[in-house]
Image (cartoon, rainbow, N blue to C red):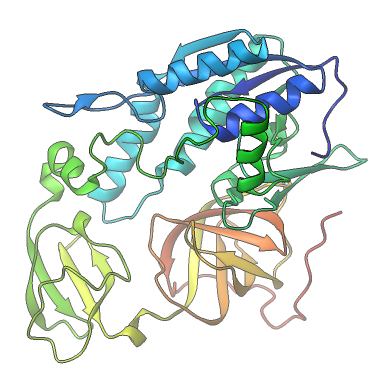
Amino acid sequence: MHDIPPTETTVVVAMSGGVDSSVAAALLTERGYRCIGVMMRLWAEVASGEGSGNKCCDEESVEDARRVAANLGMPFYLINVERPFKEKVVDLFIEGYSDGLTPNPCLACNRHIRFDYLLNYARRLGAGYLATGHYARLRRQADGNVHLLRGVDIHKDQSYVLSVLGQAELRDLLFPVGDFAKEEVRRMAAARGLPIHSKHDSMDLCFVVDDDYRRFLTDWAADAMTAGEIVDVEGNVLGRHSGLPNYTVGQRRGLGLSGATAPMYVVALEPDGNRLVVGPAEALGRSELLATGVNWTMGRPVSAGSRVQCQIRYSGQPLDCTLYPQQDGSVRVAFTEPARGISPGQAAVFYDGPHCLGGGLIDKMDPGGVSAASENAPADRVSLN
């Protein structure tokens, strides 16, 4: 556990009742920090017969977090952020799907709730840092800058959804479990007698009570669930779809095209015409994308022509690419090899090896009308100094 500040510092620990945040709290209290456990009550729908409550903060999770805090001798607070979570995360999720996008609500939660609302709450409590159970690493530099790196456990790495953070946030954060593998963290919890050591990870949308996002969107965005045409890449009508939010780029199953002579994949969603475009696997390959709303974790863009890697989905592999920042703050990403499954609304996150440089939302695939700037100049490695 590197880059931990002096022990006189007060640290707020974001508790979830899970293994990772509990071990993060344990590691910090063992080092002598004055830790305060805080858990957020988030919005969740109420479904008849299904009960209610966000799975990240249901009553069982609250009690688990409270017991861990008591076990560690920490004060514990439960704060209500249902309204901002609904406005900044859930509503944007609904709007994104209604606009034909494939949004990632964890990005919105990290940007607007966990590392804005909760971080500011920690500051108001007089804490020097906010600690979470994320699998990522921070490296503090002599000049005061903080580098964001992938977690040691590459299978649990969460730097992708932390790419929305800048120096103002990173300087006040701690990720105590980022230097460990998940199984090590579970062993740490068991060795300390923490009652949550065998608790399962939460993987689904926390605010959807039955984990069925299509049902959720039918209830909350019924207008977006309008049937329309399925067409091939040449515009030929092949069938009907049941509503664009039911599909995502790269999807093969559930298209209802039994008469197709070859496997067909979702190539694009066209909300303006309510059309679903499908094609063969080779039609999925894209040479470029345009990312907008780009955040740079170091506070400044890389130089045009920088050769880095781009990850286009949470569980995706990093793909070699060249970046061309644009004057409007967007970034053109040119892939070395065609990339498949690029979904507008997802994040394009940039890496130089383990270093997370930042990222933005995928706006367009194979965009036209953007400048290559120094496209013909020698490609650069990224300077992290």
